[in-house]
Image 1 (tube, rainbow, N blue to C red):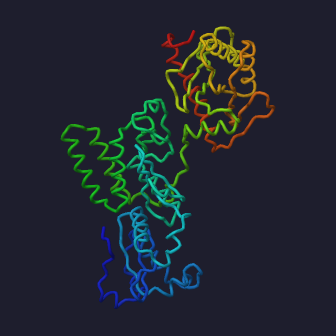
Image 2 (spheres, helix red, strand yellow):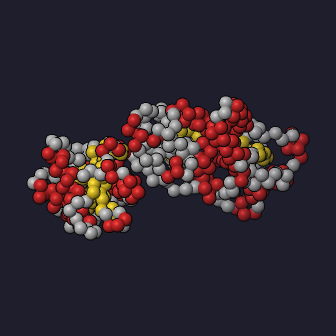
Length: 446
């Protein structure tokens, strides 16, 4: 990709801007408008250079308040064609940042425009869309002129480089992350899931370095390096790595087939930030201390009417699989969720009390007010001082609190609610493993 527009001087002198745009290609690229002194006064991008650049020389553009002043000062116009719309978007941002044209001046210092931000001081750097870039510890690209196109670009690039864009604080080698459940992006092959330590720090940084090469406009160099890496992997019979590189190269080569970038913009994936989740719960429920240990209880009915219960344990906002338990319900005939909740809570709290163990900071019951009352009754009958106990009803995601007649409705975007949902969903998943339960009866806490 050329770094400067190359237009013969004789051609530039012979043609007016209106005439020159008629010779522009219909491919993606960036156009550069100049004044009578040859200074670049405006830079824009286009999916179709000829069509977009021509639009400035219409009667409507001459009277439109957004373009009228610019149009009167255009003495010349050049272009740089690119392979794809993604390349055009990135090139436009780089040129605006370097050239600082007068009619792009609103982008120079206004932090409300979007940036692509890569964190640099984390073991597993994040790639984020932001309007409030950090002053240090990050590498910034932008500002960009179109937020939706930038979001679409991030989505497209994530399919190739599989970086994370969550806010989790992941440290390399921290074993607690082995119990974390990756989000949807890993399931659809758009993230390598460092949150579950499924990729090494070194391999993840290699992917980030490839992304940086691409963002810096060095796609040809990147493709050459990837092809060499693929060939080496193949010769070493590391066919899985070779196949992954082959697929990434094909995705890079097919960027021009992506269509309208705005169509790729997608909503935020459902992330759970453990620290923010615990802080949110402390604030919402006015707890005296940060809740470090949360236990979740759910009831499931197996084939043949057998009832079981699951108990999952989260420590510092992350699943602690060694603390998971399953219970066979012994005293309840037929299907009775309330009675089953009473039994399992009674057995769990009694055992902790008898063994001198501490109670959880939060006991979460899957269900509504009836399930919560059943749990509280069980602990009252034991004569213990119960831990902070709440229930979460799935249909409306309402939180029931002892002593309160009406449920609480936390914000759907609340980190505290997200953490409760994670605990509830994990207890439900653990309870629903029918075949595993039936085949491995020794796993039940009798």
